[in-house]
Length: 218
Ligand SMILES: C[S@@+](CC[C@H](N)C(=O)[O-])C[C@H]1O[C@@H](n2cnc3c(N)ncnc32)[C@H](O)[C@@H]1O
Image 1: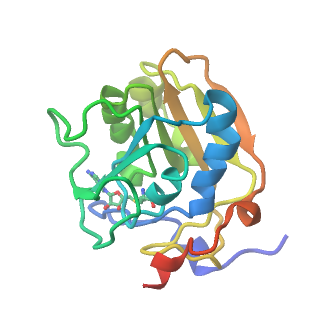
Image 2: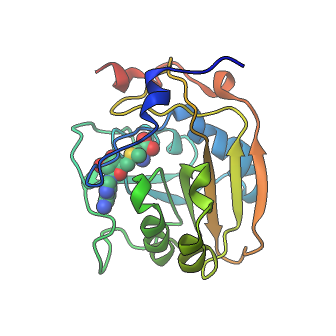
């Protein structure tokens, strides 16, 4: 096997602590989650709402709008992009305590900033009516502290790993990028506490659509 030395590999999301963790998700990766994980288990979310609370440039919110009837998106930083969702994106710190600006979305789905993933999960569980799904590094489920403070008190419904890696790069979605970092979905759903595991089959080519990378070119 040849060693991959692309810039995507070298970056591997080694970000300064205070960074926003600006790593947009390829649209095909969100469709893969919906087609191979969400819909087979919980059906098409027709009539349901989702909040993408770290929406960045909308690369995850837009494919979510292909499935959910209502999509709201927000981010702590203004990226100056208007995602094509049902509601205008707005500026909001998702971890700000108190009453959230959106009450009772059925789902909260996002790729959170890496170092705040556990906080996003806990906040999401306070807010979402039905479930929380986070796109995280596969190694996210390792760690004694996270086990004690997240997975033990809040058992997951599911972990889903990608057979085909999702290459994230800083500040853009690059269709030509490659990566050595593995990503997965961790999902909490009310009433499902017996954590299952599944593998998302290779589907990048099949689930990439024309226009998916338009924002990346801007
Ligand atoms: C890994 S990027 C995810 C982008 C987007 N979810 C996607 O999948 O394309 C993390 C995002 O989290 C945002 N962020 C960081 N801290 C936040 C906070 N406390 N509340 C809301 N968004 C935050 C950053 O601005 C950044 O856009």
